[in-house]
Amino acid sequence: MSFLTIPGGRIHYEVSGQGYPVLLFGPGFLNSRIERWRTNPARLGVEQDWADPIPVLAPHFRVVALDVRNAGESRATIGPGYGWESYTADHLALLLHLGITSCHVMGACIGVSFALSLAQAAPGLVTALVLQNPIGLGGNRDVVQAEFDTWATEVATWPDTDAALLPAIGQRMFGGEFLFSVDRDFVASCGINMMLLPAADRMHPAEISADIARLGRAEVIDPWGGPQRRDQTMQRVLQFFQSHQPEASR
Image 1 (cartoon, rainbow, N blue to C red):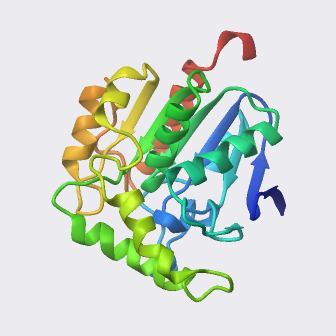
Image 2: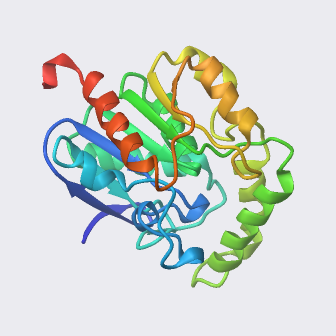
């Protein structure tokens, strides 16, 4: 088990395979962590609707997966400025630690927001994006708030957590619109090659996926999930990343 020490905490990460880097942001809202690619604690024994990307990508790429701060085995101080920038700073620090100056990125659920926040913070770093089940605001403020409240209730019980800070963190991170971490103008202007695996439920509104597809001129796979399609879809993800690998790294 590998850890990166950061100010006020540590980030748990795993590296598999060799070659051009692919960074993975797992699903699970603010409990985004490596194991959520494989299993959902709320549905023990039930396979995910998607294939785990790690065993598919690792024979071809250097795959980096992590538990984001205060999820899984990762911990970091919760201070008054806690927000999207805190997470992105961790992710940039991890890439620096691993000597990675450019990479592909795949994010699922909130991982889409982490991925695009990273791309915005470091222009030229991200060479291709696969965006699966993006969260966002689409008549679902109550659902998003409930997810944040579940996370906040847990972390409020941890030693040294000032629970009084948590409502402001929720507003700072999820009080906005669209994907919360970036706006529509960034998606339209970033110029990164994108593949979209869209969603259509209350936490992952269809209109958010539609906006990403339109603004980012993304390659869309739909339908893509479930037992009949998930393995084929992951092969298409592999091919997409291979086709957009920078020539100098081939």
